[in-house]
Image (cartoon, rainbow, N blue to C red; front, top):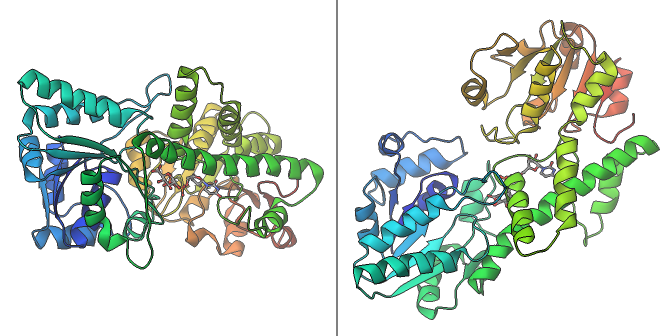
Length: 441
Ligand code: UGA
């Protein structure tokens, strides 16, 4: 089948690549000419395992095309995917200007019937709004053409995006149109083998499903972080509690890891947007507000502990920081807990020597040159002359470090671990002062 994808961000590029991988013909359209040129040369704007070779192979095989020409994209296919960004507005609502800009272009340029598919995470009612917007432009043009607008949210995780897209656990298709449904069933047939993953519903329910899924996952994390706070004060170990409750299949082991707060481009933004949607319709959403509040507080947990240990003035102190990305296997630092921690250390006069396996360029890009941040080439180099080690991301290579070297290199054998990577008893036995999350005061 032929498909056009508007917006080659995370969602659009991965979706386009896996569709091409299955043999579909895909044209990607983006307004960013430099990005499109780089993609043609096989240079991928993001770090995502498995994505670069898949894009390169399918581009070379002539199944994956890149262009800035919107008209070419619109005429290329009947199925038009919108996968542009929906950044949060100042009030937390999702900003739909990019979605509506693509919709407007489709309305102006379409010559035959189209099925427009919303992949971006968009507020409930957006499929309807996009339909009205395109319909309005067609009316101005004085033409009447068949048009369907479908909600088909994406559930991929950064760092596992290609695998998630190749093997989705569900394919939500929000439409009442049998024609649109038939096209999407055909498109997704290669991803829907062995058992049926397609769940059809109306567009509004599909849109809310996306927010509800992220809000539920964020709720699990904030719940565990709140329990971790209780465990600390009660002298219990949250890791034992986690295993104890995870064994109940109604609760499950997934997404109950306490830590230094959730970050990334999705949970913080989507929880905010859902709170905003709720307030617009006169609902208070107290649970969602608490989820957000608990998370904001959790991002300050490590700095609180740092102050408890070193006092409020951190002038003259240097801290080794392992992990800048909001989670492993990505270079993404959007809403990352590491940023809250670093900025609080700087505000208190301290310095940071940071290392991340992927996010060093991103950190450079975000913070530039400053004398209170040293970006180190290795995790060991970050330790040199530092007063303590801080951990914000659970990269595999941090899980079994050379503890003797850490002890020898740090000025004091102190670790503040925001991801509960180590066994507290063993570290204490080795002579470390070890602060983790929910594992003793
Ligand atoms: C999330 C969802 O997991 C995807 O299903 C969804 O498609 C995506 O948002 C989206 O809406 O686009 P992502 O933000 O890539 O994916 O990352 P996650 O793996 O969900 O992690 C989010 C944050 O939660 C990270 O900061 C992670 O460290 C934190 N987390 C996760 C915890 O603190 N504890 C956990 O148990 C799990």
